[in-house]
Image (cartoon, rainbow, N blue to C red):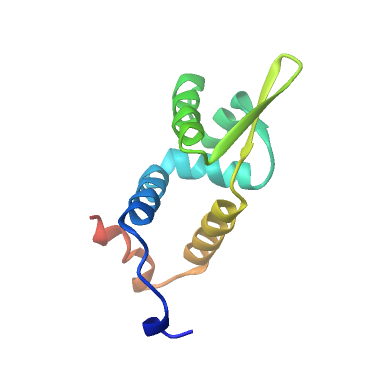
Length: 115
């Protein structure tokens, strides 16, 4: 399929994509998604892995949940969080793994592009 055969995404789709990327532009939220991409976890486990406090992680989870990227379920008295969109897992894992394996002067070029 060539570029001429595809249509541009609608403004609504682009806005939704920008909102999802906006949520993931926060390093703590991206770290939470990375941890959850490896399996479900409760807020205490997430706070330990991310190196943050419970209230901050809870706020990040609320935003991710509101956007439909994360969902929760009860396990007795515990609330367990998991990724609600497998495509987000793939996107986050691919990007982080790609950046983690880069080295040399080009490795930090994205940091200088802050929009």
